[in-house]
Image (cartoon, rainbow, N blue to C red; front, side, top):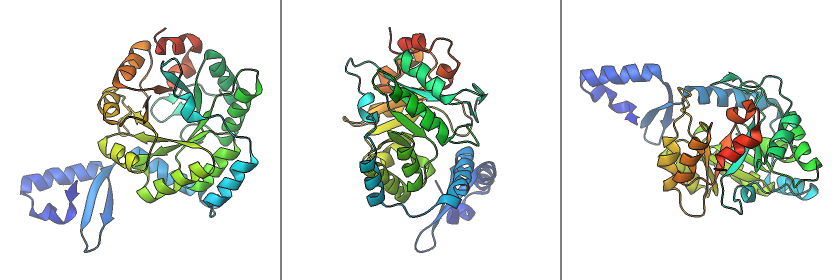
Amino acid sequence: MLLSSSIGLMPWNVRIAAAKTMQKCQIRRLRFPGGLGLIYPMAGKLDEIIAHKRREIAPRLRPVSEDELGRLHASLPAPPSFARALLRADGRLAIIAEIKRRSPSAGDIKAGANAGDQAARYHAAGADALSVLTDERYFGGSLDDLRDAAGRVRAGPAPAIPCLRKDFMVHPIQVREARESGASAILIIVRAIPDEEIRVLRGAAAAAGLDALFEIHDEADLERALRHGAAIIGVNNRDLDTFTTDLSLSERLIPRMPAGVTAVSESGIHAGADAARAIAAGARAALVGEALMKAADPAALIAAFRGR
């Protein structure tokens, strides 16, 4: 981090380098008592998406208390447990299969895919849980996709599997929507929101009977997630600026997680060898989107991920 109040004291060549870095990055400035300002670069695309999400949900915002969410939970059938689904009895890697039509990094993945049909394919292929993108602008998803997917995996004779609402969560109203739409868990992207919003979202999820997957990208995110009592932590192997993936992030961060935390490796898993690296790092589960959306035989790919 750079102290904005100290840039003027730097040698001229260092000042030039700092200025060039600041021009390339979006900068968030924090003000503290006494006037000290801290500046640090933020992931530009993530900031853009979060800003859009706040505007998108603004028309439907209202206070949503934990008591309200508790009453909602009591009025609905209990969803299948996301946390338990990630801890397979055979010790093999649990697969969270993602329903994702497009993404900022990949563009169109499977345009026009029907969420309910894709959920049924994943269920039949042996997925342990689903991740359903509900962001429309950047990922082509919707809450209807979550409703359709949850309905399909609970309708047949096979045991139901849980659904994660994959979206950019910033307010408890989104938690209520997730519970009403059949989710078993929500995503909390640690670096996307301040600690107070994380605290509120975690409490809202618990009141609604939902698990929370805390997504991290570095050691600072991990420290914050642990301070909030995260029980499920996912390492996103994708760089939020360049969109490149690097499984060494999971290899670096998962071993730092304490015993009792369920580790998930997210993004960049396309073949059995990738899954093997995640397993060796200590992952209990992997979240896979693009590879499974494009797979002609998702059951065979899931089997490969589990080393079969």
